[in-house]
Amino acid sequence: MDYTVEITLTCDIELTNRCNATCHFCPRDATPHQGIMTPEIFDQSLARAIEFGATAREQLGIELAVSLCGLGEPLLNRNAVTFVRKVREAGLPCIMSSNAALLDAEKGRALLDAGLQKICINVADEGEAYTQVYNLPFQKTRDNIVRFAEVARDRCDVSLVIVNHRRDLSHVEQMKDYWRAQGINQFIQYEVVNRAGSLFVDHMRFETYPELAQARAMLDASEEHPICGAPFVYLFIGWDGQYYLCCSDWKKEVPLGSVFDTSFLAVTRKKMLHVLHREPICKRCNHDPLNRLTEQLRSVEKGEAAPGGTDALLAHMRESSEAVRSVLSKVGEAAAAELPFDPPHTEASIFAATAK
Figure 1: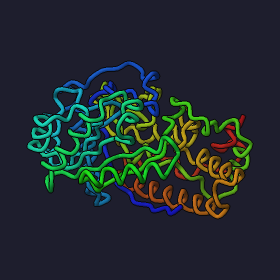
Figure 2 (figure 1 turned 180 degrees about the horizontal axis):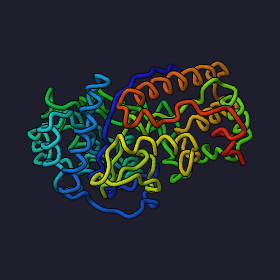
Figure 3 (figure 1 turned 180 degrees about the vertical axis):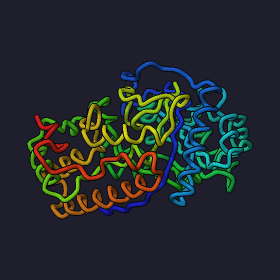
């Protein structure tokens, strides 16, 4: 597998964690207190994004983008169009993720007029299979997608998100061929994400695998523990105005403070401590470096991956970690001065501390 490291910064503002779909690869039954973001909370969330965006621009030369997604369907929020317009009026790029079931002609035109620049539409099946997986009508969704793409043209990028929930790459390619025939040519391919353990995935029971000890030993022997960059480059604000560790915190177990009380920079230290100690959710997440390495070693043991892929993954995680640490060191003295960038390799190290 080829790995590339590209640092971008995105502020994910969750317009709602409710959804009109019930995809079997989303732990919808584990969704905690549900709600819809109010205009007052959105305005303050956007103000925090603007604040952090200025720091990112000045210190890193990186433009912060705002994604209206979260863990639900943003078009369920009746103010979604207004929120897109506010993001664009603030001078920030605006992206939206949707299942497109509510993307009728009127809504589509309104989003384009508001300045939406990119939409990512989740659709990993077609026909009756789509209806069974998403519990949404396929023909209506298909018509919405094709119509929006035709109207959007060069005003808004349209990408289809294909989750490989079947673990069948040939099906993914079939889906791409189907949508190319409909005039869609941009795709984002994902594997299933276990949402920090909120979704049971049979091949992601990391704590039960003997390869976990081997992976831990390999990382403990390295000069620097790799860290997960998701909490630091994909900033997350919930519909309730709370900062959360990242978008994989499906159950909202790690609230870090309110947008009315604190800034992104101020919660960075809290995020780092959670990531370093892997508590309470990172130890269950398939994005966690230890778990990623465990899964890779297990795939090699089962003959599903080449041994050389392990070295490539390790190199990629180290390179990614170095890039994230570089970002953290530059985003401002208020955060960087207190960050424990180099955890010691002792019996109290982050992996030894979490060993069972």
